[in-house]
Image (cartoon, rainbow over all chains, first blue to last red; front, side, top):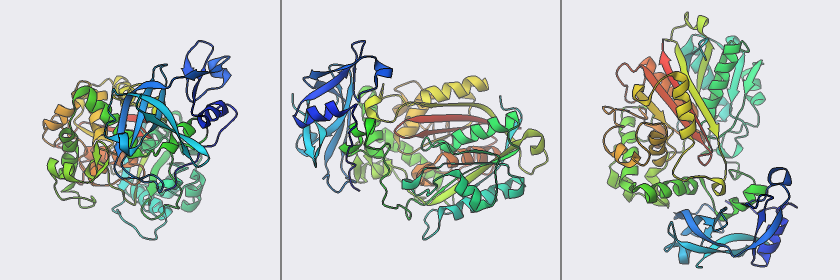
Length: 125
Length: 384
């Protein structure tokens, strides 16, 4: 199976533009709460995009031992991380770090190129 | 709530592996089979519910109209809600509501799919990789990984063990031993489950449901008509449903399933408690999903699911026997299993269970989930 290639929209373009530069930005709504993926103003009010250091804690994860994707070699870990700003982010931990991936572990968001797009990865803080 | 409605027939296809059979042929087999079981014919049917938009899982159903055309009927009530695995249970509630208010007289709810032979090379994403899906689908996600993430969180918070998860598979396989149509009928042990190939933690191959080509259908009609039909009429005592979210990045709590909303609603509407249930069909896509259901529907306390499933409570002689035909873990699971959960819940009340038949049950429960714990539907059934 081929991994789906993300398509961007005007709403989430700032995220992918920052990702291409290795930076994490989060949408911040009118009430100060952060959102990822971004939502339209109809849901979050007037918003802006703010830089994030990308630090967070692993909420849960699963180590994939059998890959269904031609371009992903097992083992790899899919992790869901709660950033310090409160939002959850889904990403990958590659095979080298997978053995150390554990719930409660501190990580930092990074970006790995995948074709002409970027996949969220988690690295040591 | 549904006093004018009764279930009057059901049929599960004996098929498990097909070759070059269009799923619509199976739709025809199980729908006519269920109608025959009900003492009715296609000419009596004015309502049709099937799950549509199911291409990647071998359902090949673009829309409900295709199936109506194939059967040669023009239903004046229809539904094709797709919320994943529990869709048929959700559709049965819609069928019951339609009959209750007079929008239909005889409704068939059916599902058929051949995921082993009609893959069409279409990926089966939970969402398309644009918008919210762009933030999750490209990371190498699968159903097994998503549910694995929920199970891992449960193990971390409550100390649930891989051995306890494996007990669910052992119980289902034991129940399947008597079911002549179940795909896997040889007994297994906890050690067998743990020794099977790891797929995505904490799940091994035997923690995961089978993949089959099959189908099933149920028939509902008005209560006054049901009295004249051969099967003992079955009532919907209570029903609850909920949809929550698709992506893991929107989950509030990885240790709770949406059954925590659909289950209590069903019990409240039925005026019943978990202790009143004699037999339960709990959607088993993975060993963890019945464990979550037992907690979230109130059969045991939150966090106690591990010791509970290891205690013998879910075995045929226990306080809440589950998945009496072998479930998805041992008997039958094309892309979606909701119709089979419902069929077995009905069969137990009719005394027609093909695997283990519980002695004279009065309250039968059908509980299904969908997506990545994205939806749930719980239905309580009683016989007249």
